[in-house]
Structure formats: C-alpha cells, structure tokens
View 1: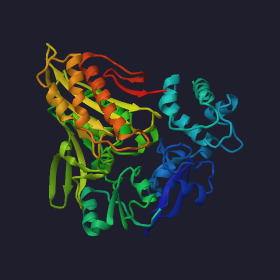
View 2: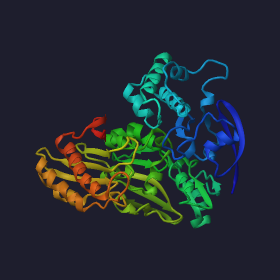
View 3: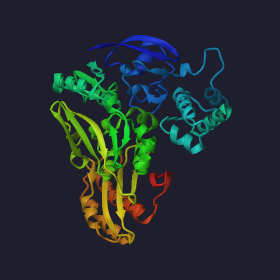
View 4: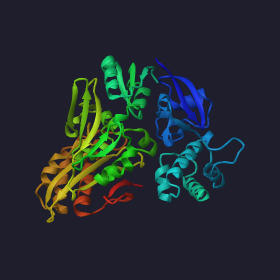
Length: 157
Length: 307
C-alpha cells in the first residue's frame, strides 16, 4: 500500500496532503479535510450528490481516486462563496426559487449548475434538464431546480 | 476499497515497463469510472494499479491525411462528444459519446477504458463497429492493430493481453454520402444503459440501392455485435420499408441477450428487431419513429425514452 503526497488547489487555496493509494476523493474531502458539504449517497457515480469540479470539469468524487487530483484545482460547494460573504448567483437562485427541499442533493445540484453556466451562460430549459439529469432529487420534482438554474443564468447575465 | 500500490508513469514506455514488472498483479486505470467500481465490489483486487492519467501521448483527436480519425485511448467521452473534428468526421459518432451516462462520467471516463472494460451495454462500441473502427494495442514486443470486429472476445474480455495497452482507436475515411445513426432504447431513465442499442452506417446509391451497410448492436449479447445476416440481406437491395422489415427479422437469430432489469432476453431479442428496423428506416428512408424526447443534431441520433 503506497502513500502519496498530493499538492493541489482546493477552493483556491494550495493544499498538501498525504493519502494512501486507495483513498477516494470523496473520503479525502469529507473525512481527511472535514469538508462535509459534498455528500455521498449512491457511491456508484449515479446520483450526483458528490459532484465536484476538478480543473473546472464536473466529476463524481465517489468514483475518483484522490491521487488523480495531484496538481489539479478542486472546487467544492464550500468554495462557491466566501464564508459570511454574498452567495454565488447559483446558490442565491436556489434559495430564492425553492430549488431544494430536504437539501441532501443540493450541494451537487449547485456545483453541477455552476459548471453548466461556466460552459453555457444562457442554457435553454432543455439544455438545463439534459445537463442536470445526472443529479437526482427525490423531493422537488425538478421543476424548481430548472427554474433556479434559469434564474441564476438571468442574474449572471 | 482494497489496498494497492499506485504508480503514475508519464510515458507509454514507462507504463509498459511497469506492466512487465508486475505482470498479472498489475491493472491499468484510465478515467477510473469502471475500475474504481470493480475494486469497490472486490471484482478487481490488483496489488499494483498503474494510472495512465499522466501519459499525455495517449490523449488527443486528430484527422488523418486521408480523412480518417485517430483517437488517443485516454481521450474522454466529453472531448469526443464536443470535438469539431469528430463532428466533421461523423456527427452520429459525436452524438454516441454524448449518450454515455451523465456529464460527470463523460468528463472522467475515457474511450480506451470504455473499450477494454468490454461491458456489452456501453454506447461507443456499436457505433465504432458500424464505422469499421480498429484499435492499436501495444506491448513490450511491439504493436498490432485489431479490428473492433475481432476485439471483443467474451463478457468483459478483449483481445488485450497481459502487459499490453490499448493506445489508439483508428477510424477509416468514410464516403461523403454515408448515412449513420445510433439509437438507444431506454425504457427506464435517460442515463441508463440501453435495453438494446443499434448503430447503423449505410451507403446507398442514387436509386436507393444499398452499396454498403454495417450494423453494430449493444446490450444484445455477451459482447457488442455485428448484425451480419441483416447486413447481407440488405446489400445490393433497393431499400424499401418492406425490404428493411424482412432483413431486420434476421437479427433475432444473431443476438443472444442476457436477462436483466432492463428486460428479459426474449424481450430484448424482439426489441433488437424493432430497433434495427427503426435505425435502418431512419438512415435509408429518413423516417424517425418512436417517441423521441430528445433529438440531437442533424444526423438524427435519438435518445428515446418511453414514459
């Protein structure tokens, strides 16, 4: 069992951690670094609750070995806005538009929507549904999520 | 997760050296979307994992001088889905990569990893087979090119041997009038594996006579398949709805699907006929059937979900 020193950017801050080879990114974030905003639910890359950005690309932290992020830039939900500062347009839009109920999927939804708007600042409702279809929500029925992403797009433009 | 030693080579030569050193105790990892799951399920417990992420020579998409396409094994589904070169080569190929799972998996998973994983339910193999694709496999003693027709040997088994790396996917130049489609039958959710998937590439002359046709099937057996009897029945025929219907009947004897939550073997066999017929009618006659909830691009590759 090899151990690896990872140097990477986490929410804009340089970090250096030692991890065993088999560590998954979700466990590095939640257990080692106490960043519990990123949730783990299905553990097989289907539900989207563990969505994070690695070099800007939306990925499932539950499927990614932590060693993959050596040299990369990782963004979690904690990095979307400063503590005590204004929320990001996507966070704000989810609150204003009721884009969540129980909230367990919300960090993943917000990260996924942030990645969408970075790539496509004015998505159609269909493009939003297509992009977000891998982020499951058992409460909202999705309408409010789509409306939230649309509102965030409008607020950002 | 089982424990293992991780190695991060930065060149193909270094990766091959590690494979040679650790033999059957080594396993390659590319994007990780399949290997991580298989390790978590203890289906894979390698003592050494060799990560290809840092081997940049295995990445990239390029058009060849003759109009073909060469794809580095480490290229992600998302890169292929969005590549202007892939769209220019064959829009249905770009769309096929767009059908893979979700945006997260497409960002992380690679085409080479997808092929060596050899899950018969995956999207890229049928279309790559319909386009007459091949792969380059490299080992310590040199490299060889294997047609995708001969690449998939059995359930999760391929022609890649111990100590070898699939490095490149090669696609030949295509006729400008080639028509292609990839149809994926999804009775459950849009990000699911198909109940059955059909890729067709077809060339017809101005009179509508079939000059060449290749049909790839996914979720229709223990490996991705060619529907060779259907192809033979179409070749040289004037393509009418009746000719296509009769030819599509033959697929029932070519497939050997597995029972699973996406349908019984018997149901999938019948759906293989229905969807082969639909894919052929789409490319030959311009008919789009079913209830497509999503229509991507001009070549008409469709996700179809039954509500």
